[in-house]
Amino acid sequence: MSTLLAKKFELILENLFGGGHDRTVKAKKNIIGLFLLRGIVTAVNFVLVPLTLHYLNPTRYGIWLTLSSILGWIGFLDIGLGNGLRNKFAEALARGEEDLARSYVSTTYAVIGVLMLAAVVIFFFVNPFLHWSAILNTPPEMDGELSSLALGVFTFFSFRLVFGLIGIILVAMQRPAMSSLLETIASVLSLLAVVALKIWTNGSLLLLGLTVSFVGAMVPFFANAWFFRGTYRRFAPSFKNVDLSHAKDLVGLGIQFFILQISSLVLISTANIIIAQLFGPAEVTPYNIAYKFYGAALLGFTIILTPFWSAYTDAFVRKDTDWILRSTRKLTRYWLVLVGVLIVMTAASNLVYKIWVGKEIAIPIGLSILMAVYVSLVAWGTIFVNFINAIGKIRLQLYIAVILGIVNIPLAIFLAKVIDLKVVGVILATCLCLLPGCFIWPVQMKKILNHTATGIWNR
Image 1 (cartoon, rainbow, N blue to C red):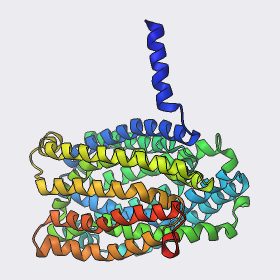
Image 2 (cartoon, rainbow, N blue to C red; image 1 turned 60 degrees about the vertical axis):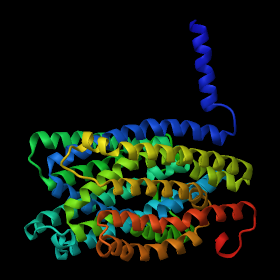
Image 3 (cartoon, rainbow, N blue to C red; image 1 turned 90 degrees about the vertical axis):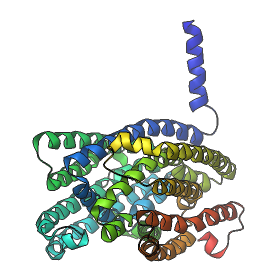
Image 4 (cartoon, one colour; image 1 turned 45 degrees about the vertical axis):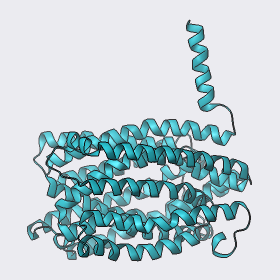
């Protein structure tokens, strides 16, 4: 009996990890690891929402969400160098050029380190002149507290951006599960920190923000020390390997990613600010609860997609078109499963909200439906954008994202305020802006793989 069970277990492992291209085997292992780790992160985040909500209150929680969204834009101050490193590092490894890969790492660390140091110094002098109470639509007496919080969070976020490059290197080496482990550790430590604050302090927005931001910076800091003194010592950043001539390659691709990221940020991440300005910080809370609920489904799909970016880069460099097409067909089938999951989630949404955060936060069914639509649109587009990003042919995506980024804010205000759809109008505007790409990106991917892409389709 035990022998039979052992053979069945071996067969299961073979089906999960065996067979197919080495690239596919790596992807399977990482997907399983990512599901386990992201499952922990999701569970932690679900616990953190009511815990933080009760530690503060709906209004102060909304303020924290809005402020962290604004300061989260720090991630784009790397002018796209992170994604540039991801692609160039993977390409160098695919060609067996380790010296070039090492130089890319050192140069990226140097450039981003200088940028972040400059950003912190500038913010230190500019911050006293920013009226955060007006920016966040809060009482004027909170201005001092918010100013101190903003400076601390900005500083820690900047450190996290520099040290977070280790995660990009792990992903480029087709080890996204290991990169996700760092996020998991940070999430668990953040949860423990909030529990400690709840026990020993009394609803301090300043303490909450500084503590969570500090934890987020320290985890990648120690990860750099761990990996660059061990497994990846040969890629450890050093001044002697900094080559600014390679910065041109990184920045050339990076700038395009940077503009694309900024445009996508306007399209997707300005919702908190729009809602806070139009309806007050308290209304940010129900929007974010719905976003986090449906974000769990998007997270699951993103886990499946994550290993494919650098794998696509490797496959494209090696001209393995068959593998790319097979992988894409599988991902479209997984998308259909996601749509089914979203329908079930929407049907159960009211019950889940009541169990999760209680009855005091009312979330309209229209908001839930449109969040489901939003997730399905993002997921579908990402199937194809993942490949396009992996090979750096992002010029068309860049132009469209800029146009839609400009359109999104006035459209959101029009639907929310003029048409009086309120918070629902904000997510509806985002969905309408995402729709064109769902038709364009599959066409571009097909043209590239068929070698019929010319002009803007191939840049």
